[in-house]
Image (cartoon, rainbow over all chains, first blue to last red; front, side, top):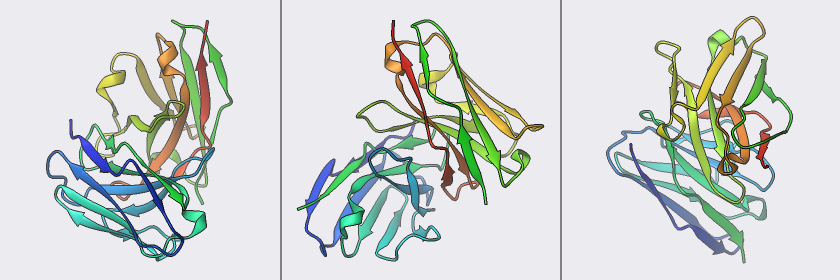
Length: 107
Length: 118
């Protein structure tokens, strides 16, 4: 199975900061990676698919990059409503595997 | 617009089985690839399994092999996930989600809480 290593596990930043979360796959997954945001008590929601494609309706401050084994989710200017836990998911091959999650807080 | 509505919370005893449903509206099931994800309280997301869009057959995570069965009823546009031999560690929220054939899971059910307790 492909292992996804996500970092950091938690992050505290100020409003307006640029925030970066990374995911590393244990083997190459081309662009088969998506990013999800989960707020407390809610189902996850799709932010980015196929490594860098922004899901419709998601603010443009979110962006994704990478291919192969190394991927990044960037929030260009952190907003209070971005407080959530973020997960990467490799959907390149079954079994799909999630990263461990990054809990993002506002200072 | 696709909506997924899941069945209500369940409380089961260890060793029992649970069957969670996910009703699709806005699309017919035959056009979709559906997956299941679970979240143990306070923990991360875990892929349970999904339907292979190539042949429509279910594929399961190794963790659940032999205990999970995913089925579809195209007459009612409902997918089901049944988990057997339940143990306390299976206490979790179970989500169904639509996969856009490699372009992410863009629509999610509201989640079904399954509690396993004696």
